Image 1 (tube, rainbow, N blue to C red):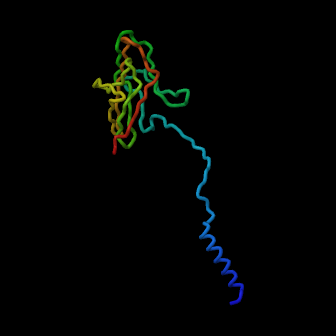
Image 2: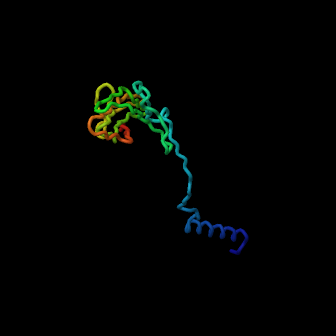
Image 3: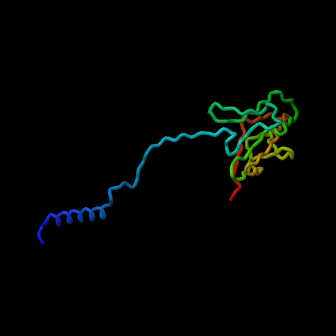
Length: 165
């Protein structure tokens, strides 16, 4: 068998195939890249959990933008009586725009502030939550007690956890 042009090409092709199988394809197995991500916050009307002033708010609860740019709800009331308990019925409304029911709780309230389920005087807190079904709303009363210590919180945190399995 002589070295013909055909035999040389077949030999080179065979060496290339065997080398590729033995040493890999030369493709990389790891890559690192830097990518930018832009995150946005929905306005409360289109958020999964929307907070708004309730029909009993009478101008005391307002939607505002904080210095950080975050959307917040602000409670503005300066004319409270001393040594008294003041109740703002149905002052806050929370709407679940998500597909799953959520358990809503609140933390950061002090002795001077209660967030209560409207109509039944049950306060929600870190260990007491209320379930709000999908596409449902819940009204809350805001109760301020100026008897004794006036330790009003700077902020409170609402936590919503899905209750679906």
